[in-house]
Image 1 (cartoon, one colour):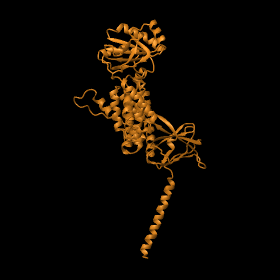
Image 2: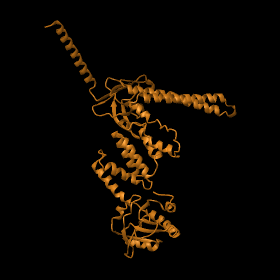
Image 3: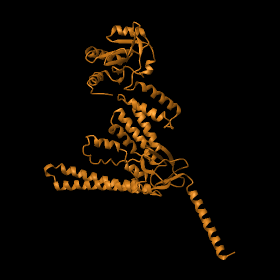
Image 4: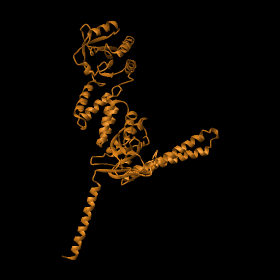
Length: 488
């Protein structure tokens, strides 16, 4: 055999052997999908809790016991999925020691040395080995502590000097104000360097959510709401809506809550419009899932009149359309049934035509009144709230019946006709009274009346213009509606 060929084969065998050994070594090292070693030298705990953020809550992910023959050492490992996000390391008394980010690195070490009770000061003794993302996270935390301390110290000194009144040193105050501004500018500059210098890091994406929308100069001729419309339309520009890990970080929920509680107009059309726009841009399955749940849940329980239409929209467009595969089939069926039940009695819908008998067995319908307002008053003989509210309605009826062009159809919910008739004889109810629990429909179900008293107000065309108002709110609404000042 050629000597050079022989040497090449020997060398190749050695290289392949080394490569195979290295591969085996790596395979052994990465036996688990994730393996995070936590060393907290000096802490007394024999067990640690690993928690994680999810929207506005924190949950326990795992509990770790100290390694045998390795004091202060705990290992989080497994072949399941450890979602991207921010995690918490807490002691066995639920005291938080530190946070870390799960990003691309799945095998790394968290080490804190020379920890001293009672506070341990983990942050200033902490290091990450094998996780560049957490190196960035740690450096950011340390720098923010320094910046914030400087701002607070300068602010405290400023207040002390300012409190001297006329004796205050104006030059010193100006210098402290300049120092504060310089510190805040430096903090802002550093934060931007983290965000835009590491755009693919999960921690950078989390921090970027805090960056507010920059509103450009208003174009010539634009109306007074131009800046507001720009802001609401660009509110999510600095949020990566394709990043699953944001739901497991503490900043996404406050941003979402602020959007619906303080940014989006309270009108149903606006809520639906901006929700659909948000979900159209959301490519992350986890964010999509949470936003759909949040909006549906929020407006199903809303106390604002008419916002049940948002719930109906969400169920019909997202749940019934098959875009929420994570929902249990039984729960989905109940939600869809509920939405279809509410849909015909939303504001603006034509009210279902209800026929019921009065005490003389004469049929009456909520469609028989040619008035600007038909008030459907659902009440019960045994309802204590009805006993206090009905006289208030009677007073309003006597006083404003003609000027407000209104009529009342009072529907008694009780099947006890004897008690119903006795109540009518003993109390002033000067309008059309029907009851006996016999009707052309299951009116309790159709009108979704599960508590009393309950009001529906219909206009002349028998469209529902408001519901669920109190008697105290009713007169004000009718007056404003008649003047065209309010519409639901």
